[in-house]
Length: 173
Image 1 (cartoon, rainbow, N blue to C red):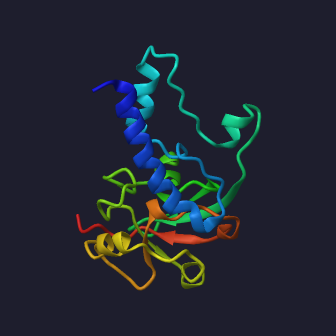
Image 2: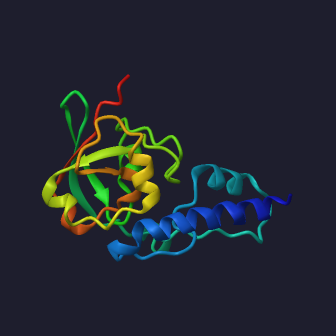
């Protein structure tokens, strides 16, 4: 199989997932917003100049621009608080990874696990987009499931998240 065809398939799958994640948050979206890291590495290693992957972000459209962020706090299973500046439009799993916060995300945000399970404050939870059936199925596998549990890979940061606290439950290990 040609590498360009492999990248196109993976990028399309990632784009479909990204579209679902960000549709309700009015986040600008392109089919290639959330291309998995492995695809980006393969693209960088490829000599094919005719293959172009575009990433919509402040940095991609204007190299000197600074991404718009809001302050949020992750509370780890031990109760330690980690304050971060979260880029609007990024999902909470990626924000945690970008800030070296332990939130596994084993499937890379493709709704195939529950390792990015987060617990939200009720006031924020009530404003989140409705869960997909697939997310509900994965949450059934999560430890310490609550009425305000969601998967971090499915929730994109919005302006109204400024100042929120989100809890990372104990994974049972």
